Every structure is written in structure tokens, then in C-alpha cells.
Image (cartoon, rainbow over all chains, first blue to last red):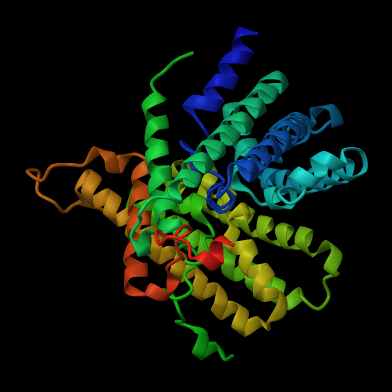
Length: 202
Length: 213
């Protein structure tokens, strides 16, 4: 349990995907003008991470990793170079399935998250989490913890950022800096804040 | 739209990063020094050309309902080839770039251009469009990387440029500095091309009677 908590906190704070690894930035900048939409997006990311990372973990360790096919009598086979195409396929398919399930059984949730789900298929944060999970060599439980951590960390970051941007509407910004330019500077400061935490060990 | 008219096209007017806001992750994350940035730029341009040309060539035979999956598969196979080539011939760079080579798959520029341009145009204009956007991406990435390496380490492409007496700016070694430089780049471009600037979300003028009503 202590190790589970450790992985969650590490992935959420010390190695925050949005503000330390800078993944998923296009969505981060584009869909953060209001706190309410940012909350929806954050929950959608957490949900998709929770589903895709553990499933990709199982697929990688049972089929793709070097020696994983020894149960089929092929101990020398190494399919790990196929992980990009496999992971993106799994993510695309799972996002579709989640959409269908939400549409059928959870209409309220679908109304709130629906527009974000297709966007997340091509979000670097989702594919990045699966690739980092392979690099870190997590087992299944570890990958669940990692998914919780990265998903929650990304959600917290985007909600924080949206809250700052809402306040920004009333400040006097130079014309060329309106919108995109200021968004970059703010994200820079937020990232600095998270860089300050990076020394902490849990 | 002829090939020679589109390239070299509007690299500032329609830059994928500062105008279309696509492909930010890799620009921010691999810009610490110039060498990996150069390799990353070349990899993205190669994948972009392949995907735009392939999608454009297949656009008439692709069923509309599964076109996204086909596009992603095309891009992913190109990225696998690029990744294997890098691992074989530039293992050092491949280690520095880590997962960011794989993340070219989800680089919004690649899918964005395939969806919005290559799906509706013939092969040659699509090739020109890929070059345009690739060069626009590379220009911003290389500018940020050069600035960060020069100010943070005093070197360019690992060759010392600034004298030792010049103080090194350690901030440039950290990721947030990429945001600051990119923000300033956007500011500079929008001061030069004011038509790109966004309207303020809130105006300081008091509302008129009509608006209040």
C-alpha cells in the first residue's frame, strides 16, 4: 500500500505530466478558458488514463515484451517495436468504447465529457503515459497507481491553469500578448512552481 | 494551387505553432539544446511528408467512417520506421529524445494537416503543405532550442560560442523557460503582424446604456 501511494504521489506531483513533462499541451492550452470545462476535461483524462494504461500494461507484458511470447513457444521473439502502433490502436478503440458506454448508460456524464473524449485519442498525455509506463517497468498494480497519479495530476494542473485564466480576463495585457502569449507565460510560471517541488521524496 | 506557389509559403502567416496552436508538446520538451532539436525537426518533417502524401493518395479509397483509424495507423507505422532508424544510426539522440519520438504519432500537426488538408487535396499540394508546416514547426523549435542552449550553456551544437566570463542562465536548462521564450516569440510575431492578435476578453470601457439593457 505504501508503494502504491508512493507511485501515485510521485506521478501526480513530482513528475506531473502537464507541467513537468509538458505533455498534452495542445489540449491544455486550448480547452482551459473556463474552470467548468477544465473540470470536465480533467475528469475525462483521468478516466481514459485509468482504462488505457493498465490495459496497455497487460498487452505489453503478455504479448509485446522481449520473451513475452514464450507461452506460445516463441521465447526469442521481441515485438516491443510494435508498441507504438498497438498502444495508439488500443487507445483509439477504448476511447470509442467508453463513448458508447457513456452514451448508453451515463447520459449526464456523456453530456459533460462527450466533446473531450474524441480529442483525447490524439493527446500526447495519454499515449505518453503508456510509453512512460513501459519505460518505468511497472507491474500491473504499479500501472494502476501510475494511471491514477498521472490522470489526477493532469486534471489538477489544467483546473489550476483555467482558474488563473478566468481571473486574467480583468487584467490589462498588451495587445500582442492577449490570449495565447499570456497563456504560455502563465504555464511557464506554473511549471516553475512544480519544478520547485521536484526535490521532495515521498 | 500549384506546388511552386505553395512552397515556401506562409511560414509566419500560418505557422502551425504560433497560429494554429498545434504540436506544442515536442517543441517545449525537446528544445533544451540544438542537436536533439535538429533530429526531432527532421523526424517530424519526414513523418509529416509521408503521412500527408499517403493520406492524400488514399483519400478516394478510404471509407469516411474509419478514416481516423487509417490515418493514425499510417502515421504510427511511419513513426516506427523513424524510431528504428534512429535507434540504429543515432542511438545517442534516440536516448535523449526518449518517448518523444513515439509521441510524433500524437503530434497534432501530423493528424491536423492530414485531416484538414491532405483529405481534400491532391498529392503534390499535400506534399507542399507538409513541407510548409514542417518548416514552420522546425523554425520555431530550432529558434527556441538555439536560445536555450546559447543562454543556458553558452554553446551552439555543443561548440562553445560565448566566453566563460558570460554568466550562464540556469533557468534555460529547465522546461519552463521554453514557455517564456515561446510566449515572447508569439508576442513578437503579433506585434509585427497585428492582424493575428486576439481581441481582449474584457474591455475597460464602461458599458453603454444600450449594452446594459
